[in-house]
Image (cartoon, rainbow, N blue to C red; front, side):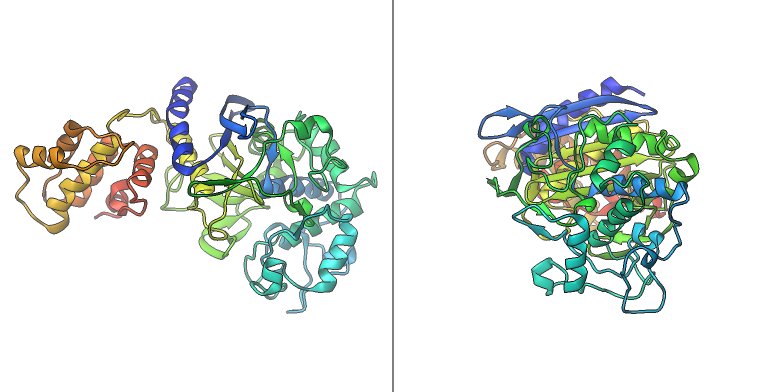
Length: 495
């Protein structure tokens, strides 16, 4: 695989993506087989001082840390200290009030314990030890979001539906504390049994991202997080997650990529091949932060994508696992691992958009997804480098104009070259928008009514604009929801 071509594509596209999404800094690692083969960093780790983002900059992983917790407890399963289907009430006095079946470790790792959605039980001060924190949470019996007004603490019976629960993963972390033979804390166990064997020297999973729990050298390398809105970047005060085994780790993309590669490659010495395979193979129907989804499966913690339709591997012979993370209010994290290709992608950004809860289209998520599209093109064996270096916006505007004047309305008469030249000459273009009249006219002139206009339009677009380039251009032009046929979905459905 041409890693130099991927590096060239990232260097060309990522600064533009960051500018579009308002992302202060972004760091990327790509791993293949057993090695991290490409790292890149762009922008700033701290805007006030001008400190650059580097590949050694540390950031919060947010919920991407759940996989560390999953591996830790699965090690105890392999040692016979707890079974996947053992009731956890043998160890912790936790009972779902909605039904007779007890909660098992399998339920917790697949978000099917019946616990409702919660946001991590954050506070302005570091949390107490995990045992005390969970005792308080279950005694209160109330979700943290809007003081319990948004979602119920118990959402339904055990096993009935996927409900993403930070509290549930915090319970898993407490089981690690209770059952590990060394009798060490959760943080110590993960350090010794997950990070150390994999050489993850820039990773730590503390009770709180605070000087009392994180070495000064690591804290000094942490990026400053920014809460963003269009035109605004706000450095908000530090917050601490009470449900810390669900998302308080600090790492670099390179370290996290090594972790993902270990799981893709049969466990990497931290799990057996069979257990690692279970972790990245569908175990139950999955979902998103907002609830169950028919299009998603879940392994143990990881989301599993290998069904028909969709992008990035669906139906293309490139199935993958994925997860993401946020740490309020200033950091986002993104992970994708192609299971058959044994390729890992990790992206960290010091941005968390203040838009609607759980939406994957807001800027802090969109930046990572746009970068992931570039790498996905490369994984699929295509050249990810830009095909329209200077005239992409003009070319797409021409395609849209040609479609609107002909195929969209079923009109067979095409605009003449003089008409198109007049449109291009009369265009009023906002400052900062590159305009290439030649590219506009060329693209508009290529669209025409045919016997199969949807198919032919899709083939034209795919030939001229790779999916990742098209996605960025659509967002820049303000048409992110452009019809599916532009990606060729109509062709795959036989339109």
